[in-house]
Image 1: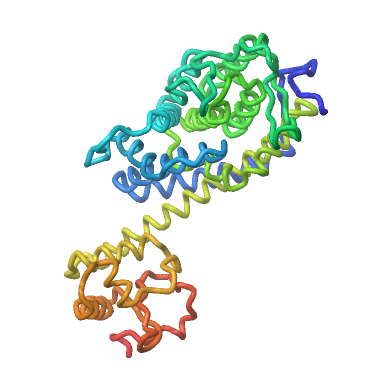
Image 2 (image 1 turned 60 degrees about the vertical axis):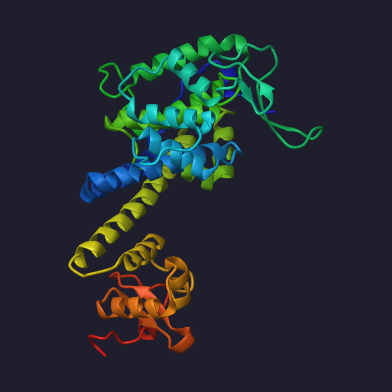
Length: 396
């Protein structure tokens, strides 16, 4: 068993080599600024829509990393309620644990200018377990763990367990958390005493440090990622709702645990972890950048065709094609699919589709029963070679 870093004489004095991490941090910062610039270009209304979608993704993914699959409908309702965007109230109350997770992440995003202290962390953990249980197991809620048993990260079936990490004894948690919270306060951007010059590296160290202490009976992963969100918001001095790091971590869950576990053993040189974290953060920014590109494309499409008379059926189908993206509507649109999507008759569907082709909203490929319709967005090829599209009415 490798030595946990909290047993080292220098604990908790983390460090990293600038030469090792500089390129990853530089690239992550570039991608972060790129997504911020794009968000500014789409306007407040669409930015609000993006915020709700990113928060939904963050909630779903941070739970999924822990092996918990949340109901998307429940998460969406909870997020929209929290943001004041739900027009129709739920017929019954949502899940309290889902509401609690939404509260925690939203508080980390928007409350970055308030101190992070023991009371706030304990309130976050309480919100995650409103019934005082994790599954059917009773846990300590709203306080650091106090049990004498070892806090271990274990995987595998009973009798064949693999111990990945052993956290500090409960008796040492208050001291170690005091050191962590003091460091977090002292390194907050804008603090004249701070020696931490890169906010992304600070977020990486904060996550590693907190997860190594593992101060609670349960919920440490979700709270640790909320701390990352708060650190990144402090870095920019604005809510960090443009990107979801948890989505990226979920996609590479195995690599995340491997990188974290490696950093929790050996030495206090966190260079490899900071580099991994910065790369993952950069990917998260790229994902959001692509989402914003889609939003810009949608806005441009509707602006271009704003003067064209369309009925509700046509608008509904066009919006669906836009939402699915380039090549996302599998197999292309045909009359049968249009009928199902709009609950209309075949003659009406044929007329609607022909009108949209004549107006330049749709283009076609194939003939007869193989005829398919594709939305006209510049640059979108729908995985079809250009020569396979039928000539448009204006050029044919």
